[in-house]
Amino acid sequence: MLLMGSKLIGIPIVGLQTGTKLASTKAPVIDPSNLRVMAYEINGPLLSERPSFIRIADVRELGEAGMIVDSSDEFVGVKDIIALQKIYELNFKLIGLKVADEAGHKLGRIDDYSLDSDSFVIQHLNVNHGIFKSISESGLMIHRSQIIEINNHSIIVRTTAKKLEPIIKPDKLSYVNPFRTPAPQTDNRQTK
Image: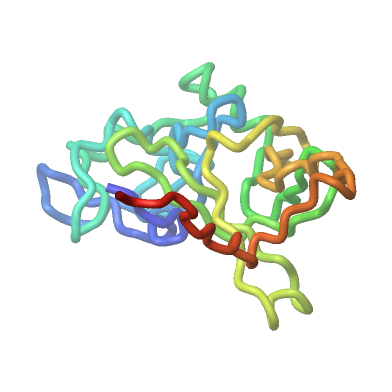
């Protein structure tokens, strides 16, 4: 099922053993190489170190109550998992990132995204045009298959505009009016 990324910020993390709220999500840690949410940075009074994270691999279920985990033992620090530390130190923020097409035309900035609730892989980017264009136009939804490049400053996407074919001028003799039907020919054959 696809979920909006903004709906997963500030949701409770509930312990399966106690059934109580242990923490809440603060911000996603997104791997820019594959646009996958690896973990969420979390807030809460029970945390032993700051910053603390819940890895997606440790989430048992995502439901109406929030993210369900076994216990607060699932919370990790930034230095506990090397792969998580490397991605966290990149400080990659998807929201607010500029989006341009391969021709260099600015399309806007990312204001939200949708992700698959099973794999936590980002599927679509919601792009807002800006204040003036948003009055007359709605935003764009870009599928992950259109992404060509992700760098520190922007995301480059494949353009969907069709390239213009060269115009071939027809000969004057080959011009046929498409709205004029040829006159029916009379049958001059004699029947006996």
